[in-house]
Length: 334
Image (cartoon, rainbow, N blue to C red; front, side, top):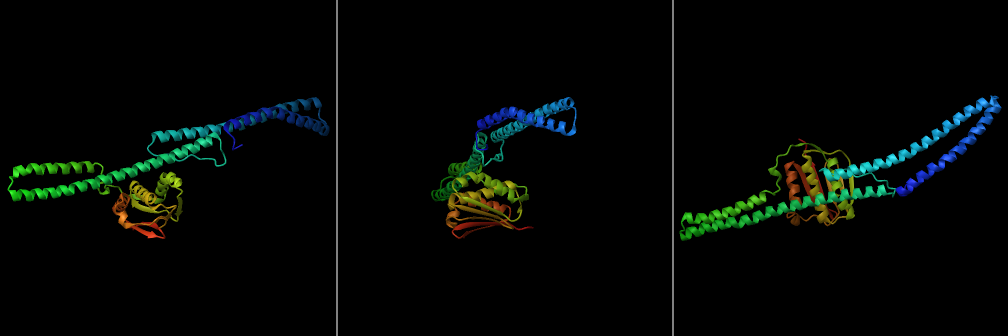
């Protein structure tokens, strides 16, 4: 009955309940009749007295069985209502909370409407996590672009200031007249720095409270966000947990570190397998096209990874291995 629709299950339960009433009545009647005959013959008890007792027992047993059937039916519908309530809470949490809820439990051997709805809600959670991750990566790219744009604009402005100074010296332009040009160049430089500083990512501008952070849970949380995209691109993920690895850091920044590593692998390695080994050190290995240091220097993700590792004194090694890339990280205990 697990592979049937809810309407089928409802009709099935009602049919069984209706058919059970006369069936129980008939079977119980024969049982009571033969029981009455046997007791009368063996124990030689007054038939009229024995008959009244047997009749009372018959009705008690009959109604007890009916209430038992009703209780079983009620338990089934209670279970259906509980699943609907759980889905309602999950959808409300998706709509109202900052964090995404855990995915709903799905019965693999059932294809009823509730199970299909649970599959749809789980897919929605995966898609939302993927979109959140995509927005985060786009924000990183935007910040890096503004940072580089600010540098590219300020470089010629500094050269222009020097050229103005030399030009003024050669032609003897009064200082008050040259000051107008200097002020305009300085205004452009400040304007560019103001725009870029509002969106510039630099971990050194933030104060963090270091505490003991368990990486096992953060890795699971990060992989949940990437589950949809990795699964969609048929990337096999293997996580080997040898120990419970703990670092002295900040959980939000370590989560960002992990997200940038997975992002780099997903976007640039073109791998079909990803291995994560949690031991005395954290090892993240892909089997893609390998690590190119000349290209890596221009990738925003690598800049973020290196900055975070430096902030929390995490030893980082990125190296090619068997046609892929291996990220090895460990933190020395003080």
